[in-house]
Image (cartoon, rainbow, N blue to C red; front, side, top):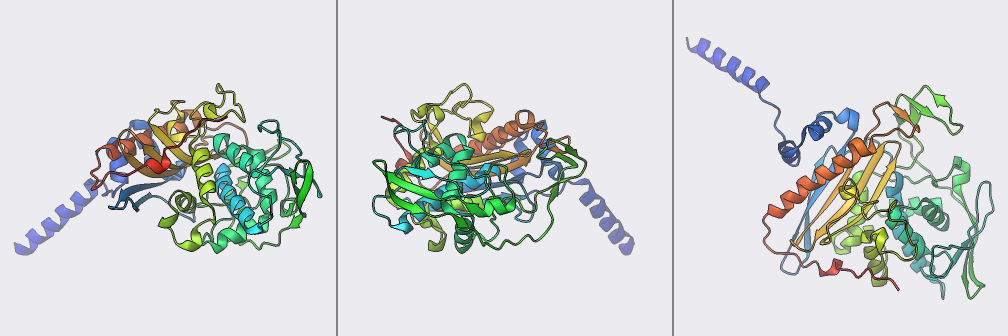
Amino acid sequence: MYRHFIFLSILFLHFMSIAQPPSRTFPASLLYEKASPQLLQILDNPDTFRYQLIYTQIDRDRNNNPRFTHYKLRSNKDEYFNPASTVKMPLAFLALEKLHQMKIMDVDKNTPMLTDSAFSRQTTVTEDTSAANGLPSIAHYIKKIFLISDNDAYNRLYEFLGQQYINETLWKKGYKDIRITRRFTPMDEEENRHTNPIRFVKDGKTIYTQPPAYSQAKFNFPQTILIGRAHYNRDEQLVQSPMDFTRHNNAPLEDLQQIMQSVLFPGSVPAKQRFKLDQDDYKMLYRYMSQMPSESKHPKYDTSEYFDSYAKFLFKADRTIPSYIRVFNKTGWSYGFLTDISYVVDFKNNIEFMLSALIYVNSDGILNDDKYEYKETGYPFFKEVGNIFYEYELQRKRERKPDLSKFKISYTEP
């Protein structure tokens, strides 16, 4: 009888374990509790949507120093996603750092920078009509990168830095998995290793020339990365095979968030991971990372196309952002992948948090056909996930209210 009772008890517990849904740890538990049917459909199909998420709580000590608690959902450096324009963020930081390392008199982020050509498919830049003075500069390129994710601005910083400098500097900072191999313009691998000659000018005279460079960076491509079932090639021909991303840019979500944290909160990361910037650099970056297109005079943007939340995915579905909220971020969108690395500040309710997320929305499995479900699935995903964590932050108890004055910025332009 006793053995029979034990057997039945074990059998009962076995069936109970089958009947119960698997336990979910935070933050998945919060998302499942609050999710709409559409979000549940995404959460239940990770192989289809390839989503990753990092939610970071920030708590302050008595001296207002931040302490970070990271919660991750499917964050995985080995699961490839196309980082798209998010790679523009580290290049902006590296460009400022390189200027300090050069130590060339009269050359800084505001000095006009002219780009020449010296190799196949390279192009020149001698003016920028969107700038107040009509000339391109590092600072103006950085502004356009953060406000509307300008591709040409990224290409020019890539050429100023050089492929080898970009990657070896990031690797030295500890970001071993980052790989930035290409501009955002049609070029082959050899062309992307060559970068343009560059001139800095003052009053129409050249004060410093940077010669063309060739990258000898040695990349590690550990595995073949194939995505989709078919793709259109550069000749707009449909190829019935997956698209090969093996040698494309790569930047894990965790690294991108750490890079952003290292600039917003330099003291929170090891010294080797920081970018060597001065206070004027930080001030400029905080402004451009959070500024909206309508607040810019140079460039002057068409706000029907570049609306306030154009590059703020947490609010893009609404096309607007509450006046008391600022989002310091960098987004990327390409090949059906959407990514947003964000630090959110609510000055009215005194809350702050970081949220980095990505999703893949390409139901037909064809890449380069411009048929992705960004509006139908992608932007609503960011809106709902962002709102869930925002509402959670509103009710989360904190030992101390943060002093957020560091991030209160004037966006008035002359």
